[in-house]
Image (cartoon, rainbow, N blue to C red):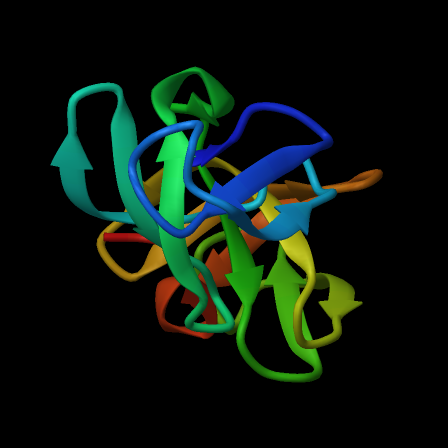
Length: 123
């Protein structure tokens, strides 16, 4: 899942009465859901922060973050196809679709394929 809005609160517990641990300021940031309690989901982010977010702040749109520097986006799902862009570590990629070891992504003005194992946020 991803964050639905530009400002999302991560809470210490599964209610609005629990204190806020931190604020997220990035729409489409990927998170992994670890637990559920009523309308709240316990999530983990790419920096291993965990906490609770209300379900209304989560989206089913797919995104991932690059885990290493100098990740190439290719024209086709093959390392032998033409490279289209180079991504630094921590870059947010919107996922269009995935095949076995590759995902088609959109990053700003670039579309292309990136190896699945170089992304965080995919199950």
